[in-house]
Length: 298
Image (cartoon, rainbow, N blue to C red; front, side, top):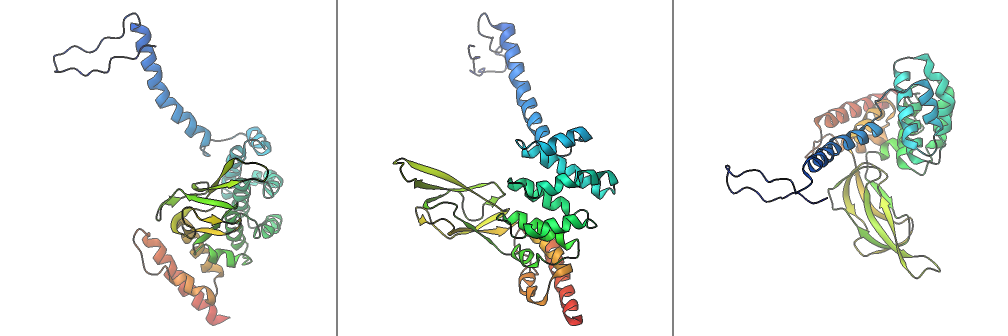
């Protein structure tokens, strides 16, 4: 298709540019179609990733069993959580699938399942399934398991909850040469590309690249390993300060299970810093006070 004339009129009285010869109606239809695509495609993407769209029981069952599309299973898990919070007894029919997804090989499914299991603190099977997740390789799985256990009155994950208040030291997944992508202060979420590691595999003379993606939400606090540094697998390469949501949830949980030795970590948030929501400092004060009260009675 011939491109339309992009030359602007020299004055308001100049006539609009005409469509290329021989393409009049077709040219206009093409422009309309392209314009509609700019509207429709983002909507379709949003609709496919939005977890608020109601699912039928059949769709929930199909989504939970769809190992090839973990986001569909996450959608189903989210709706099961909402059923539990509404007190809908029908949610119990899905508990075996929730338990199964708690041991999925997919990180996102384990993260979501750990969160869902915390919504029903009357289910003993959920509590037992959460305990092994405290040793999961993914920090977000550990965090959700620890927070969910608090709802059972179980402080087994207290150490991990305290760790949520500290920067997370991201390890290198592969030995090689580090090429950071982000700067200090940049915001990140789980899955955000942090850096690339260049390496050569045994028997392959060509250089390869491995993407290093964040495991936690927050912001870049400091690069431990600098641009061009040689790193080994498991070596700490970057510190990620916790997100405000993580801090908030950890402080709320420590209100219930925190101990005197946790006070230094809690009290770091009593003074507001730039960009920190006021509710965090308020919650830190309430949590610190509750921990002191609990310590005096123990």
